[in-house]
Length: 347
Image (tube, rainbow, N blue to C red; front, top):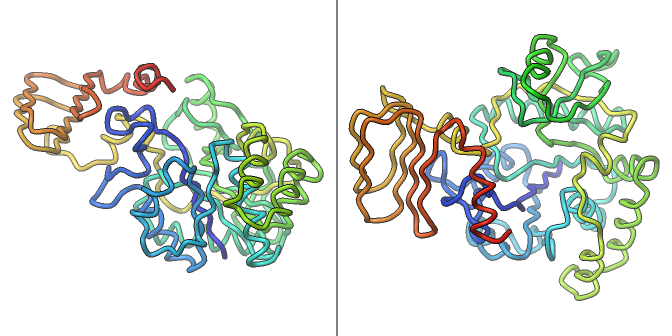
């Protein structure tokens, strides 16, 4: 198996910890390792053949954090053109090195997973199924609450050949709360976490049928031998910015999905990060020097500077102090931080 770690993104909803210059995949959020370092450690449990796709603005920082990877393991986006073209670039590069038949797992650099044995088991199953059925295999997460921030995959008929593998009946956009409750109660819906497994040939066949523009992009990149050349850069920058779900996956008619046998969290905002972090008996997370916390509950407090922070008598609050700014927010509204950070950073 080959693993490709998609390591782009700006992480605007975790400002001021995460900034456009130093996004969340580069941050140590849930332990002493950064998100991308944790992701690499999980990937290494599956294979030694691992590639990383950063965008050019973060390439050097990614390399610094992943010194064990040699130069040829980085497939750099000249600039962000969406996950669809990330995957196209990886496919065109990998076919030159490994051929077109080995299963490739695409995973993300900024997800939080604790159950590494379940992670390995799920992806090994997905690779076996993809190789046998010649299909793209999606990995879905069993929902444990009615999330409105994720898309959903509707499971169809179970495979006759592989137990626990299901046809994909449909994709559902991010629902409202009442609809999300119905999905959870139905038991036939999974969160779409953006994990895909398939060979170069499998992806190309789906592109041929449902997204010829993506296949054209693949063929254009395939002809260019030097991925650091201006020709490669200009060709890549000419591509339309697209996410793989819309450009290909949701159009495909013959996909299968495997429910993940591991825990998963997309650390997309401070409420998520708080839930992924160790807290005291009052539900508080504190990290940093000069923090004075008195009679607070269910709060996230992080200080990256020497300036003292005092937080007294609050509940459900986020306080973050860094050299890039100060955030004070209600924890349950922290998903709206991105609206502010985009204005501050002119994104």
